[in-house]
Length: 262
Image (tube, rainbow, N blue to C red):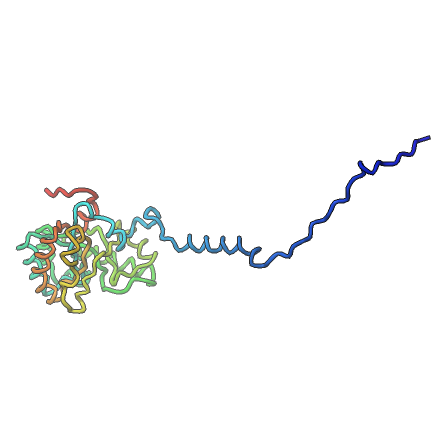
């Protein structure tokens, strides 16, 4: 027979008190999700690191990040050759400056002697498409034709360009692929003179108070504008006073330290 035991009141288990359930505010519950959304949005707005940029495109940012240590200035001229190109070459020769000319393929056969002189005097030639069309959203086969036909015209003169500058700076993935198929790199500019507006080109230069190191980059001009040719001597003098070391596009891209020209 089992003994019946009665628990002593001091050892009896105490009943657990249930804590009151507090109402959870919706704003507090959603706070972690809002913070996460804000973090993701901030990350999405951050610029891509330089290493993530397409190495086959030298855009304005990529060019602006170069040339600082040697204070490099590359004068580039689009849309030629034309009637004023020879006068522009005279100025470059007299000033001891070499430039880079992005030429339109349809005009190459009209000025073969000008192009021969251009190269003989140490200037560089780039590809500016055959008919100066906006490349963006054009069919890939058309884009490739625009680049290849210009290269074919230049090859007749013994010129092999390294860089493509699409008209208006407009390009897409098909342009990048077409340039790569021709072993070329897309090269834009970092300082736009906007000389097509026919205004005072001196306005593109920084003030003297900015200091010598403030003047550098790849300058965009057009050699088929007479106003540009007329203003060029003064511009070169002012850039020289500001400490510019004048180079071609290739030299600008390839030089990462102090420049030594032979």
